[in-house]
Figure 1 (cartoon, rainbow, N blue to C red):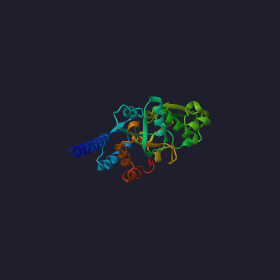
Figure 2: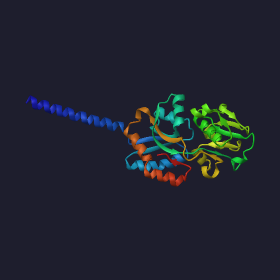
Figure 3: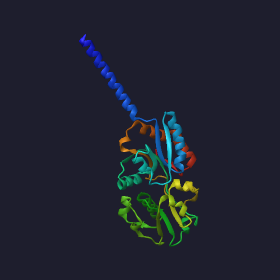
Figure 4: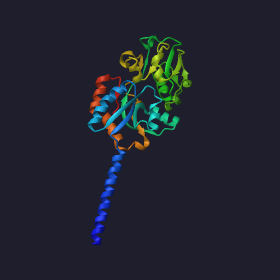
Length: 270
């Protein structure tokens, strides 16, 4: 009798432990996520991501930002579950500068950077002393300067190029005496009338009605090291919902949409 009771007690304990473990795993997963994206093409792509995710029972609430400085702060504070707007150099810089502990969990798109103008149609028309707008955040500012160097307009200190840390202070030759004007990325499209050319990130360019393929006077090659990514807090990187979010984004449906809709101005990075 005692032996039978003991076996039943152990069996019930084991069942309870199993149920508790299952409930814990379930609690760690989520069926509703808040994901921060940048204004423009990020919104369009996530409309498709939402539909794919819904088939897996995952409800995505998209939160749109028009300032690159806000989505990581919102993620770090817990107002978002994930964001999808940045490349790794930008994330690394924000983690270092602002003390975030945010990590990538999957790649999304590559958005080649372009320089745009309302005053010239070709970079050959760029006059001496032209005002050239670049982003004032370290990663995108570095990226813009590298693109100017690739176009033969400036040269940079080799160490800055190697370390991806170039700033206007690292310009060693500037034969056209270009005036480099560092502005917030979101402000650059609005400043085009005051600048001769300006580096504008793809999402802001699209919102301003600019096309990389039609309007850019300088543009990055299609294959770029600046692939965008989905990011989460480090504590969440192995959660089931994070994997489900990445799977929804990296689906055939989303890939087809990007290739069809953006025709090379955005490129799937997965």
